[in-house]
Image 1 (cartoon, rainbow, N blue to C red):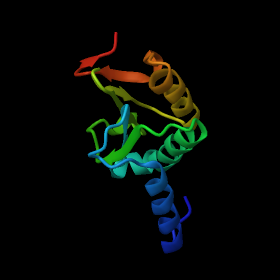
Image 2: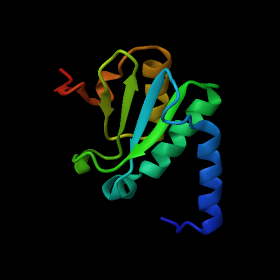
Image 3: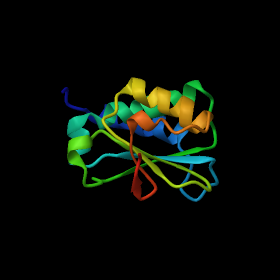
Image 4: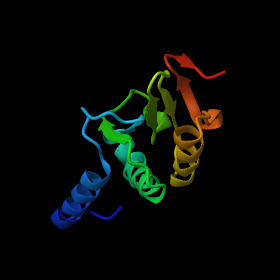
Length: 127
């Protein structure tokens, strides 16, 4: 993996600021990208980029994107948690940018949980 330079971090910061809503704002959905050390080692930076790209490409303006630390499932990284108002959160695991695109299309836009990529629904395992 190539090392990031300070100017790379600034570019990432500016891109995230353009597409992120403040935590206090009202969004239709929230996507949490798990970016603990294990997540970063497993590729969560690519997952964050894929999330932001899909939001931008689909012109989604009511999505909150945030990060969290390790969720304790290091072997299933990279992962995201999708929270839609009024519904239990869904934890998606073993992600690739292609899976992220499908999750955003199906779950965020279409309202259908992509069960084949989900580990947990609310606090229970997906059947």
